[in-house]
Image (cartoon, rainbow, N blue to C red):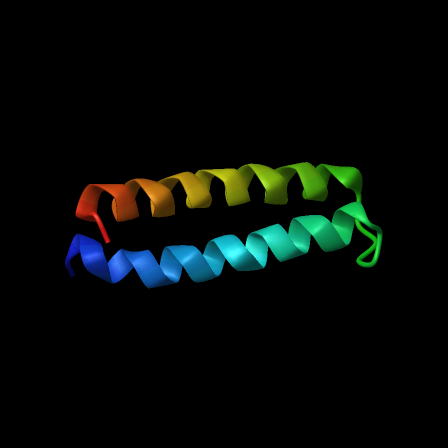
Length: 59
């Protein structure tokens, strides 16, 4: 598996985590606020990895 193969999965995971964080923040999905913060933290981490790989590969 090359580094390029991680770009698409990381982008998809980031999108899902951001959508989940927004939905829990707007209380469409009613969960404990802790899950909203956890989802947002993971979304930030995955978005950073995704952007780092894209910048590194200059896509």
